[in-house]
Figure 1 (cartoon, rainbow, N blue to C red):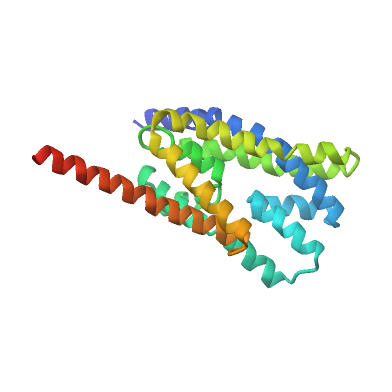
Figure 2 (tube, rainbow, N blue to C red):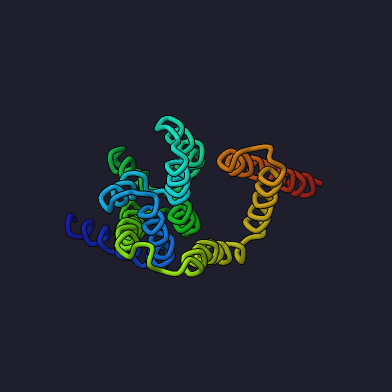
Length: 243
């Protein structure tokens, strides 16, 4: 029985690694660019990799570099990082319903590795997400982010500026690659994505909210609207069936 359990965990872990390869590849240019910018900001390679090891959040790390350049205080940086990553509460709560029951310690460990990309892969997986699977996904993405952050720092600022700027396009390509398969399965995902993008654009361009709050507000508002629409459709179908 123990051998069967171990074999199952190993199999799920391998599946997670396979699913996480695309994330690892997508993280490569983003992490390298972060390392390049970290060096120009004045961080050492140790500080750069330590930030990736502890924070593991692309948007927050990029914003932190900007704030460090401006001489912003530690408290402001921590608060900004919290605001930008507050959406992780929603992602963690959502995955908690989809993941298999496990020890709180294991959940606490892999919850650290939840990013927009790892969440997308786990949330769109059919059936229950096993602990081995999500650890596999996170192992690849986390390793890629940390190692390539250091690689970017080593490369320094020797790359042409135009090439450094073009590398950020890979982030959008990665999100599209993760989103399109889900959109093919259900219209709700496409509607939710379009709605969230629209709200975020409005909040940002109008200057009503900061970047972090714009993302959080757009996510919450679009999710509420999407669920409200689903409830209305369900009620209409129920009323129609009763008639």
